Image (cartoon, rainbow, N blue to C red; front, side, top):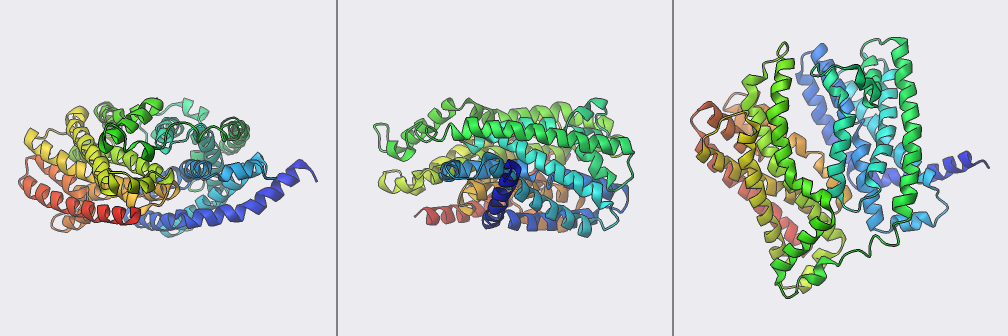
Length: 496
């Protein structure tokens, strides 16, 4: 039997197992909910160019990209659980492993794409270039995602690098929106993806289709070779040493410094050992600078389509909320990693206890989240908010950051499920902000079921000089606090 036939046979034998694993960890459940949300959102857009643009953005930014994030969770989890130890010593080859992961995640991407398109847009689509673009893009980004994650043992460290990858890979979307137009985008692999997806909705020149398919096939071949080398270098060679580094956190909590100080010291060592995590703390500042410099530029370029200045309050609210959310996201994955490493189990034998551990994690998240939200509005310079009102808004936004951490820690059993749950965070922020922008009161208050709504609505009113800021903050603080207590109790009960 030829090597290709052998790889194909082994990949086919592993493929059902990968699909079952992804189903068990909630990938399919998450995309069932996400596709429903995307369908409803697309249906709200007027038929024609607006809905076409919405479909292209949805399909390109989510189903096509989903493997980039999910492959990271799968690889890191299999590293930690020793699955890769068994795979390395089994007849399954590196090529078969990569092929199975790529095909299973691409299958999910295609299913999600078809459902979103049929029910959100319609069937008047040229399916051949459309699905070809999704399939090739998904395959490429799964492999790129594997290259990006192979050298990491921490999901937080990976996400910082992933942000750099996605900024470069997703740049051609700026051309699609008319913000930045340059032929240099044709050098990036996202451009041929957009060409094929757009060709499903409008005819494209033959040369452009040929370019797109050829480029993606070559890029896939290169990415496969690089991914195979990354597997051999970072996974196979690192299996014997990766779990020997560092001291289990639970073993140090009863040290001379006391449980809380020992935990803080262990966290500091983790940050120093992995300098990439420093950028988590800088992320809110970087985000604020994006608001200060990029949003006005985008406003000018899009002036013929929409007046973004009329929505600067809502845009500022997005930035203010994402600061604490990013920090909560990072802390949530710290908790999941502590659980997978056995730290939370070890807490039963320490003076700290699960409640003390949770109080420490949430305290850090609240303080850092408050500071991140407090500086975001003046740093982004999109809205002017009175200082006292800004402090109240930052306090409620910080509560949402803590909720973000607890949603991951209490609803997900491991980092794989955490990745699946985290897919909703962007929508949880954007949906209530969109309601503030377009839904009149009192119907707008229905969006208050989303915890970020209250801080966002208060910020927009404070920026506009509209009364009612403090009642919104009072209700928001009470509601966010209630959600936080419910999630905290769920977390403690799971640990106990």
